[in-house]
Image 1 (cartoon, rainbow, N blue to C red):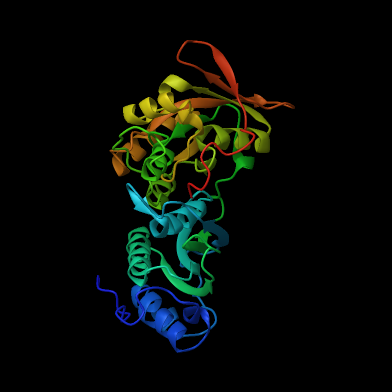
Image 2 (image 1 turned 90 degrees about the vertical axis):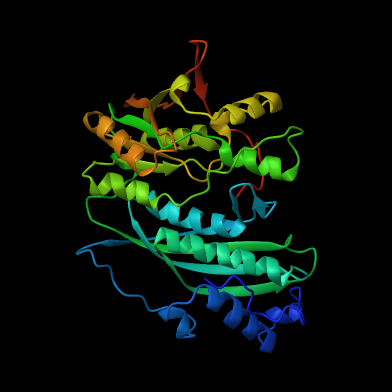
Length: 349
């Protein structure tokens, strides 16, 4: 992969409004920077959209998602806004049980952003897309006045395919199912806070930002009847559980002592008065599977991502007209998890 920016940055070291004006500079930005990094047959068509091939899975159903990314700072330990943009959309498709295939990408760029930094972001996106097995096939670029976009915002949309009968969704959750978490929680939020200099303490915590489709496909292709998947992003593990219990109308129970938390995340959370269960993740998910397949599912996650520390952390209770998430704490006292009124950590994705 070419690591040198192909734009003549000695002439235009930063993005100008002219780069979004539809003329020569915009064509240069799109053609030499974005198209060079994301090169594929659909981008070479230079059309307004991409006419994509159908799935190679008979009877597969299309899955479409979209997301926007405004994280600050743009670079943080373990990731950056470009990597996050690809991972976030790939992971949304993966949580539906789908095979992610194609992404679109739109950039809102503030005048004055360094071309070299934009190139680094684009290269990061290209590397992450390649690692996830997806291609960025079309996109858009807008440039706004200084002070109007905080440097760079990115929107991505994703298209994937899921085989009939393999859809993972809340409606398939059943009483007696087991809840697995794919790894230790709270890394991303603490890493971003550390990069902002808002912790007031030193930490070496790295974000967990990563594409999760290898793990979810590993479960599905091994024959695990995955009832539901949910990535624990904004609002963390606790909010994901509450959303699922309210959507399906069942009680959920977890044991806090079984939820893995890195010691540095636990320490930083305690000092800052934060609950790790509510801190954002960008590379962790919940899998809800039949009880008889739980141990096999856990072994698969350990094999695919041995360093993440997947664990069984709870189970699905009975249906309820007032569904709740019950959490057994470290002291042996049960508490009810609920949605927070606002964000503990704004702009973490």
